[in-house]
Length: 193
Image (cartoon, rainbow, N blue to C red; front, side):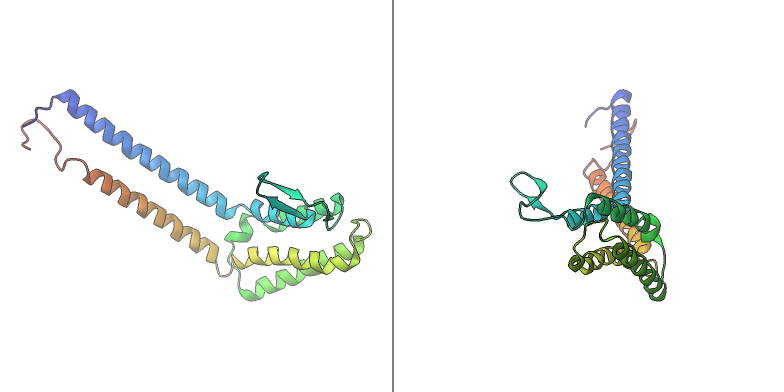
């Protein structure tokens, strides 16, 4: 039978407490990162910017580049105005809202009309080839519609809630498994192995 003194018992308890605290911190960080990723529209806006600038991924250099034969869809001023409009339209409220199909359709018609007229009224200033305007509008509308569909009847809010519960459940199960690998008894004075 092993003999445990008070210092050994205290050390074991401190290690177990520190491990539980570290596990809960990792779990909270994972939840925070997950929430930021799900609600941050920056990836969507970055993808739109790459599309407008005609950038492609160069696997060798590990950066986005413009191929020599490609030309941006519009000039810098046009790109910045479109990206600014996307930032205004796509935010966490867009994703976390609870909209029905009719409300999404109404919003999409309004956004389409606004973007369509803005681009057609400014196509010379933006230096857009008039034949490319439908391509530009279609791609912008696809990005916006995809974001709004995430809010259909609160789907995104429910998905996030479910995912966080699953992460928490997984972390709890992992903690239980780790604890079960420790001896099934905690030594104390007068206890037996």
